[in-house]
Image (cartoon, rainbow, N blue to C red):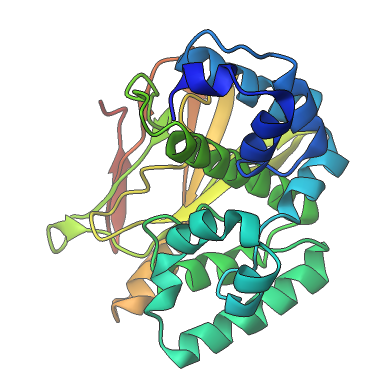
Amino acid sequence: MTLTELNNLDKIEATKLLETCCGSSKWLELLLKELPFENIPSLIAKAENIWYNDCCEADWLEAFTHHPKIGDVKSLTEKFASTQHLAGNEQAGVNIATQAVIEALAKANTDYEAKFGFIFIVCATGKSAEEMLRLLEDRLSNTYAEELAIAMGEQHKITILRLKKLLSEEDFSSLKVSQITTHVLDTTIGKPGQNITIKMQQTVNGNWQTITQGVTNKDGRIPDLLPPNRNLKPDTYKMLFETGKYFESIAVKGFYPQVEIQFTVFDDSHYHVPLLVNPYGYSTYRGS
């Protein structure tokens, strides 16, 4: 579908299609009022502004209820038929998981929902079941406020991904990658630091609060810390790298249980914050 075709749909048909991208009634109502959309950047900007600035906690929680639990095949098949073709592909990593991982995902999802009152939300595209299990278990230690903020970001990533699928004939190349990126290099072995949990935080009421979180891939990177085109306000932020657990996982005794890097965002440009680490030292710089 093209943007022109979407713009020319009647309200009922447009509602049905856009609802598959985000299940918040308020988000949908306000976005429909913006029809027709001038171009893709305008559509994405309006979708983001409504999500972050016009919606409230109740709206975000409503959107979360439109997702199947990660690894919950029965729920995916029965409850979410309207988005099965989307969520099924997004969760493809679960389909090749072992039974043990599926069972661990089910238990962790139960624990997560019991603690936070909503299901675990993650943009699952490109992630294996093992990666999603690791993310889920890591995020169980967060506060409610942190998880709400993280889940909001993950939902917006999913919304953009589904808009791209819906408007598959359009060019989305104008979308910028995550404004904040990072990679970890283990200088002892000269290889990327894989499977390292990284939290990005900002100060809220004088306290550091996690706003996004991920685990480094085989290249030592987290390419999608923030949703595409999402720009942070100028402020001081912090990345927290779980280096102690990393070295423990490769049977190396490390001196630093965590590495914290504070940095300042001045404008809308891209910020790359790498970490070069070994068991007894580390360094960082602003990369490109």
